[in-house]
Image 1 (cartoon, rainbow, N blue to C red):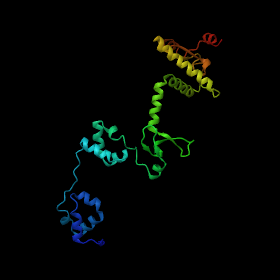
Image 2 (cartoon, helix red, strand yellow):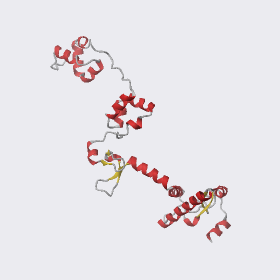
Image 3 (cartoon, rainbow, N blue to C red):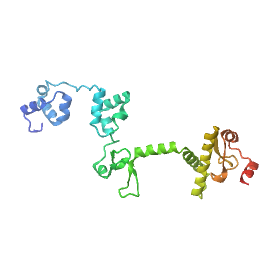
Image 4 (tube, one colour):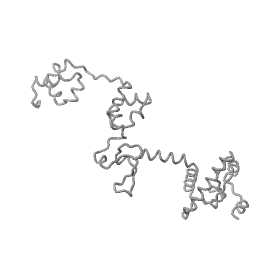
Length: 253
């Protein structure tokens, strides 16, 4: 038995006349489509319609227009996969998606969000850097700008970056004692700065070496200033992880 939805034949034909494609009509009025199909009105209602909606030709102008009307990148890739794929081939994805957020934030996230101090774009709470000291729990810059700051800081402070990397490697090797102080870390950074200055002034590559190697075969040194020295790269490569007891006594004495 067919359920009566309150549609008459004239009403069904009038509604179907507003659509040119069958797929559009089916998506917009699923109940009317099934009701008309059961009653045999389908052929009369859809005789003016085409079967499939043609796929749009994604020109650069149409892609830019569609992207400008979309706020979230995930929404753009989900609703217009053809436009996104075409934009990737053209190499304009970063340009047309610069104003978009990574995803559609919820209304609650928008309420707790703020404007990024660096890029000036309003970001949701999820996209901002966390700051437990603030009342809202979020910082003043977004995660993307924070990453750019970190990269620029490492480029400007090469010696600090090298010291930090060496310290991290030493921690992995469990060569850094738990009682290391801030003064020890400052002295280590100064040694790496000294190696960089010698490299720039002489043109010979200098490196910071562990007197007692932290990865030796029979001995394991510590990553402390007293166990570090500045030598040339050739000397460091020749030494490898070998340990000379007489040389170590001479250095520590």
